[in-house]
Length: 453
Image (cartoon, rainbow, N blue to C red):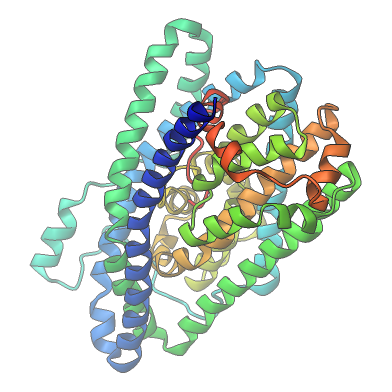
């Protein structure tokens, strides 16, 4: 038995080590973006005219993101509708979880809009509107290089087609499974291309930030810093006040005690800017906390695709920032229609790094295409906000698991108290060792993937 346990631990440690090794590559991208932003800001301040001439670098990156919008939205929405149906078949737990996710995500999006309207991030910059038909600086080489990148596909028709295809596949039943699997493989290909595109983010951020700072000076740096600080504060308030208050009222659990229990996972997420690495550990810890295995098996993986509170806040605040920076603030009607779009499209933001940026660009393109030029500024600071998004998404799913367990009476209150008080600590070795197959077996959602997107 001991040898089997040791062998199991070794098998579990191998994929974890491999996962960490794979995640290390993202650190290079993270560092490269930071360096690019700093260099771009310095060049814009010291050599403003040269900085403005680097704008085609940012425009080219924006075109690459636009190129990926339609396939990302189509694949994720189709698979998302399929996973909703799959989760709903689980019964009361699945239906309750999905209902909670939709309400909470909508609430998070609305909070982002409220905060954005209060602080008006990006106001006063008045950047030049994005014109996809405008020739870049009369430079034939630049025109040629930008012309290689394919044009974008309209977002709203793509969204409608994805919804229709998703529900049609549901009606087909087992016959639609091969098609759904094929779309799943297509999504993997699309995300692989998106990852390749995101490795050009340092170049795009460098050109975009240099051009913006060259045109507006220090005001651009102040505006971006304001957005980042406001976003972090909004996420903190959302976790402590909204999630914490709901958790205390429904389950009688203190949010800070729960966060202390998940301390190692927070460190892992902060170091990788992704909550994906902590998914198996969250499943193990929620079961150890006293939530029943069926509830955890449905709620956590589904939440990783549909309960993205941090991403929701980010999408709406970033949209308002871009609109204000371009000197064309969104009126109330445009904000509400953008909110409705983001409620649907944000379910496709649970992909890899860059999917959230593609969703943001999709929302702007669908409502105000001339605002796409401001996405270049978001590229520069997106990585700085990824930790807050990932931590908020992770906390939201941990809280949701406890809440769902309480509502369906599938949680051991005594166990919760013993675990949170430290009387029954989490056993790192045995829980990880025995959990490799369990996490994989309990996935009703199609792709529990990186929630920092």
